[in-house]
Amino acid sequence: MIIALHALGPTAEDVAETLDNGGWRGIPGDAGACPIANYLTEAVPDTRGAAVSASGATVFHHDGRATETVMPIGPAAFITRFDDGEFPYLVDHSEPE
Image (tube, rainbow, N blue to C red):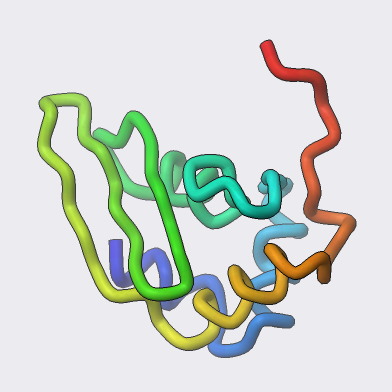
């Protein structure tokens, strides 16, 4: 998981660009629906979901395990800024299922 987080980029802008290029969107202020949480759900094998904050990330595995790690600087900065309204083009405006 930490490799996947570092792969997003070293700055908030880099992270936003990587997420945009990959098509990951999310909801500001929702730890389980942040673009980074959605990215981790796809990028980390055997994952059924993820929750993120500026301080850390947790992925939830299909077998019931949860793995946690500290959030790297670039993704942490992105989360803070995304939750504060920056990067509006990464907001998921689709209707809930």
